[in-house]
Length: 461
Image (tube, rainbow, N blue to C red; front, side, top):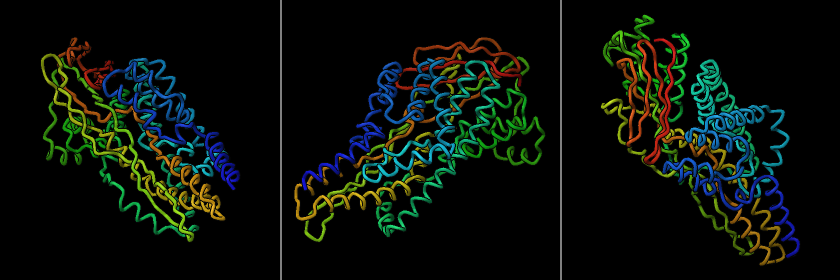
């Protein structure tokens, strides 16, 4: 009997290891990412790159982590290459004819090990950021046309991801009904930490506002106006977004909109002829990593033999956004305002996916208990113990998520006198070229005491 048990458990382990690393079988992604995540929080960009784990989660997530970290470190060619590789992998994954065959094996392995067996599918907000950073790479290269392609694609890929997620949930719910364990799902969800929902946690104001800036630079004022209004819907208290919508509504003579906008935000003030517009995107901190939340279950069979199971679920601790001193343009401190909270997006995305995760956990408890019962038949206590050990060690939460994104993004904009302006922070400076009637876009990323930044002149106002 002991030989039989060992063979079963060894087969399960080998099957799992064929589809994921030992880190994914006996640990989880956030643990592997912790050194890199910490280094990035401290502004040690090179150390963050060097400590990135080697391909623990497949080409999509690994490429996103590499791309964002190298972008902040201003290693732009390698960042661009990483994001392009990720984009190609996403296209392949979203081709259903390709993913269906291989994924069946992964799902089967996940039933007996953990969700890390399942091929990683990026969430909607992650796909939005993938194309946002591809767009930023193009802007940094002064290639506006390429950047516009990426912001147009962002909505399409997010829609495709939503359909895949809905299909996954429907399949999981069907499996639960067949097993007759649906009553257990609500009990688990009732004890799970709740993140709450708001529009800003579902839609990306950063992406909308950047898209509007790029459309306007290309002369597409109607397209810009649409996305600026979408950004305002996400961040209605952001005065910089409101002033931008007011400016375009005035220019496009949107009389109905102007009446509502002016009642809340006042009238738009035109800049002087010798001024240019400066728009600053200020990325701050690093998004929270998923943590490990466990709910132990102690079960006994008819012979009195005990079984230990852990429902291991990912969750986000309550975190506070970084408090950074203001940037300065010349000698003027800049009072930027938030346009996107990535921590909220990450929490909301996990909340949306949680029902499917809990369903798989419930199915896994049933499957693992069947293995344990088989191992413990004829009163074999050793088999029961070995099965319990295997079940406990392999039940790991799926903490995979894009963990090198910023925690939040603020924006600032103003019309300033043409010439070379100096942006400064924490003893560091960036020269910003401003021309009358033009827009200068500045990208800033701040972690710890370090800053990464660049600026580029865009099209005429």
